[in-house]
Image 1 (cartoon, rainbow, N blue to C red):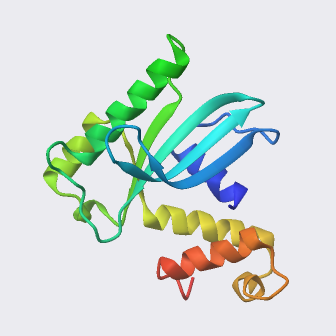
Image 2: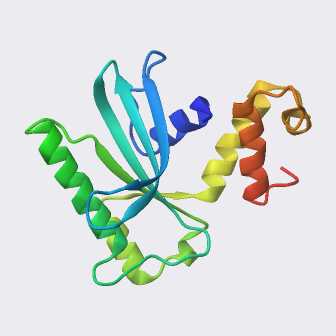
Image 3: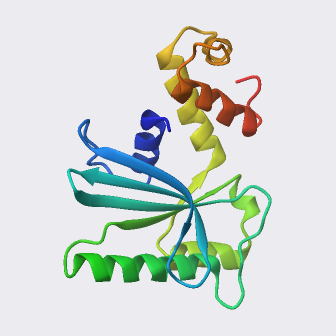
Length: 172
């Protein structure tokens, strides 16, 4: 995990209280506890033993949203609400839902409506690539991507290079 990238993602969805002593936990393919749904990525922010933020991220490249019997994002929003209600009582909810897609053009009208109804944060892969590139550039020299591929590179920096490659930013 690259802490800087996770923190930037948290900031993009409105979670601004990330402090140096906070613990970030990242997991993939997490059950939503509602049927057999699995969220693509979960970022949890802890202050000590207290959960401050839970971000569920649905990442779309080519696959469409599942829309039957109920839109996938509506199921996720309901699951987050149920988790927040059972674990926090009347306190402020900690769950946020985010969707990452290539562009607005990738969204069908029913997907746009579901994003709005689920109060999901809409992000684009270009946003993630821009953040990864900025973090890598701040880390090292102009040729940081070449250095990131070396055997002695930090894993968190090597992962940024891999992410950019995956997103097709080979000349970034």
